[in-house]
Length: 293
Image 1 (cartoon, rainbow, N blue to C red):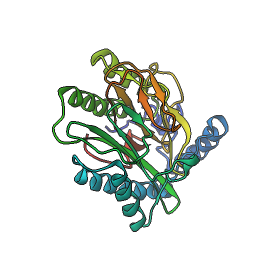
Image 2: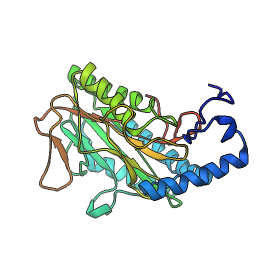
Image 3: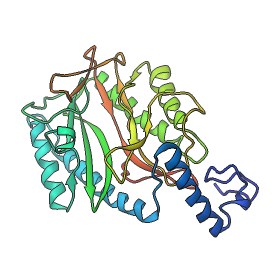
Image 4: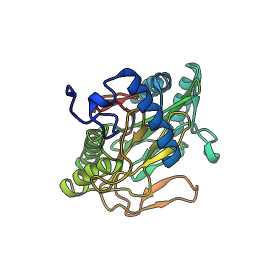
């Protein structure tokens, strides 16, 4: 969509486009001002072009890693086998698996099966026909981080499994559709919650949220997958964060297991998740970990 001279500037400044970013020097001044404002007010570090390119390179490796995992998903493999794949592939391509030793996490990837919502620790668990499994990859490459995940089918699965995976995938699409300058973080969560809970009678996990990423594994802002339209921080170009709704087939309540990492649904219902790292652009967003939804 083309922006007219008298339209609001997509940078979110509140000025008309002709009095703001239409002029290249004014655009750079505006971005520098936004960087200061967002750091001072929210501790959000807006990314410049070179930073976005660096995160995109890390994101390309993340997506290639997920593609490799997808080819290997089948009944009979262990979750630790997935960890081995991710670790060796990441290292071989010059990356660092960010989860390894992060606050004591013992593995290189999170692998969460069926009722496990997130942060599953790979181990001896064997994948069975009918399981669903989420694989969450975060890679550091040349100093930049990117983060994405997918939920995969293990062989033939039930109708319930198909439903929750489809709802989680569509939830991410609905959330991403709200990402553009001038919208708010609350718009993202509202769209996800409206679809997953109101339209599909599933539930959105509240405790686990999206997050800023790029210079660090986790940065401000937090990005809840529920919320009110028009509430929260205004989105501006240069913001890089994840959208990663965790959707339960049953109730939203969760518990953390004794390993202090693995999050499961309290009622034992299936849970699914999809995640991408995105950057807010002048006209909307760009995925830095793109895959088909």
